[in-house]
Structure formats: C-alpha cells, structure tokens
Length: 226
Image (cartoon, rainbow, N blue to C red; front, top):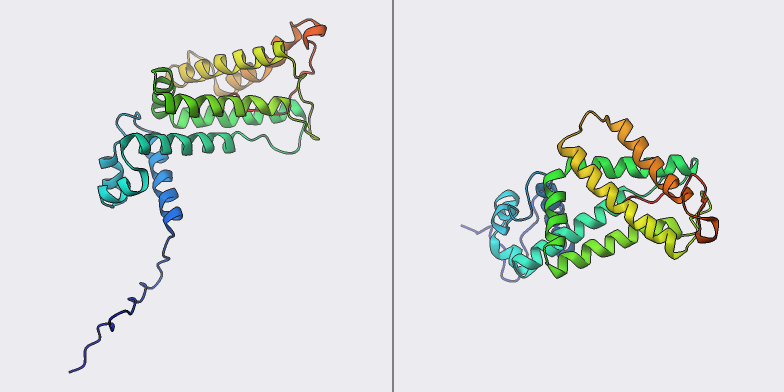
C-alpha cells in the first residue's frame, strides 16, 4: 500500500481557493479587524484576547506581530489614524467650500460610526500615554497642514501664525462638537451640523485683520478637521 503523504522536504499543497498571506498582509488584516472592533468598544476593552478570539488566531501570534499590549494598542491607533486621514481627504474637483464640506462630512461620519472608540482614543491621548499622544498630535497636525499646502483645485489659507492658531482652535472645537453631537444631537440635524462646521472656519478667519492673514476666502484647500 503506497502512502499519499508528502515526501520529506515537500511542502503541502495549498488548499483550493485560499491565498496565502504574507506576514505584512496578515498583520494589516489583524489591524483592520482591530479598528473595526474599536468602533463599538473603548480602547481598554479592545484586548489581545478579544482580537485573538474574533480573528480565530492564537494570542502568541498577536504577541509575535505586536510585541505586547502597548505595542498592540499603538499599532491599532496608528492604523485608525491613517484610516481617518485617508477617509477625510477632500475630493480633487469642485468648489473649495464644497470640498471642505465633503471632508467635514467624512469626519462626522467617521466619528459617528466609531464614537465609543474615537472618544476613548481622545481620552487616552489626553491621559498621559505618550505614544498615543504622539500619534494623535501627528495626525492632528497632518490634517491641519492640508490648509497650507498649495492646491491647484482650491486656495490655501495664508500661512501665518495667527491663521495656524485659529485653524488649530477650530479643529479642537469641531472634535468636541462632533463627539458631543454624536452622543446627544440636541436637535441639530446632520446637514445642519455640516453647514455649521463648514462655515465656522471661514467666519473665524474673516475676523482677523488683513495684516494677520484675515479676510481669507470663504473656502479652503479642503482639509479635514482633525
């Protein structure tokens, strides 16, 4: 009777219909799942055990990829930040003010869909976790930088310290406003919120004297709020 077992050194044939993932692809798949789980739970509730059980993998594999709990948290938060930045990218065409509104719409939807996780990330960044704070600050800055980058489809704001100060303050206001609205709309519809947020930045800049960068166009290069 002959055996059908592979000879020593042979690799078993891959199962039909299955694609073998590279380590990087597998890691990204786990991070995607981590971000998905974070939409409905706080960062503290997103443990390695939860991800391992949901993904059907061993805890040892997750420790191999992320090194431990803190490495896992940092990797998931960075992946979520990258996702936020990509999703709030303004469209390449349209009037500048329309592009700003589209970017704001993407941000509002992102926070509304991931309210619990997003709020916990903001709290973790503010609570003294230096690694998470660094990710938060870098993302916040990258989103703001969209306003000061030359854009053939729009008009960048004047790059002056007063304008940057107002943009940063506007980002903080929008973040708090959208987080609060997601939990308690207070009678404000989504469209009314988008109008309010989109119009507030040009209105703030109009209050600045011209020699400080004020009177900027009622449009932007389409940055997300951060």
